[in-house]
Length: 311
View (cartoon, rainbow, N blue to C red):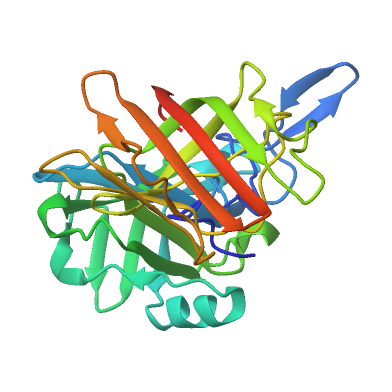
C-alpha cells in the first residue's frame, strides 16, 4: 500500500471493519434476535485497523478520539462481568510500517498531546493503556488532547497500538494485528475542485483532437495538502482521463501575493510565460496556465480549479 499524496496522502483504506453490539446476535428465520446464553464473547477495535483523520488547521487544543475498544458479549452474564483490557503503544511500529509500505509517516510526538483525563476507567502506565470495563460496559474510547499549534502541515503523523491483554476474552480475528491511526492537517486550499479549461496535445502530425480541446463538463479533482502553502492535483485531458508524465504536479501559493508556481517531476513543466497564475481567495479558485514537453511534442494547459467542498 503506497501513501497517497498528502496523504492521498494521508491518509489509507480500512483493512477490516466489523460491527459490535452489546450482545452477539444470531439469525432466527428472517429475523435477528439477541442471544442471552450462547456464543463467544469477543473484544476488539470496531472501526478497523487503519484510520486516517484529516484536520482543518487549528491552533488550540482539541479532543481527538484515537480508537474505540468494544466488548461483544455473548450473553448477559458476560456483559455484566468486569474486565480490564490492555492496549500497548508500539512507537517502533511506525518505522516498520514505512519500510513495508514505502510511506513516510512520523510518530506523533508525545509532547504534542496529553491523554484525556475526563474518565478514570482508562489509565496509562508506560506504553500500556488499561481500559476498565465495569458491569454493563461494552465500549470505551481512547481520547487525546492534541495541541494543533505544534503540528507541521507538511507531515503526516501516526500512532500505533496493539491489544496485548484481553483478560481472558477472545480477541476478534480482525483486531489481532497492529492498529494504526494517521493524522494530517489540511491547509486552506485543500478540497475537491471542479476543473474546467482547455488542454493542447501537440505532435509532429498536429494537435490531438481526442485528448486535446475543451475539458468535458462535470469533472472534478482533489487538491491535497503537501505543505503549508503547497498542494498537489491531477491535470485531466479533455475526455476526463488523467494526464501522465507529470507526476507530482504541485501548486505552491505565495501567501503574500496569491501568485501560484506550478512544478512537477517533469522538469520541462513550467508556468506559461506571460500568463497570470494565481489563487483568488474570495472565490476559492485557482487560475492556472502551464506547459511542458519539447517541440513538437508540447502540451499546454489553461486550467481553472473552483472549490466545491472538502474532499
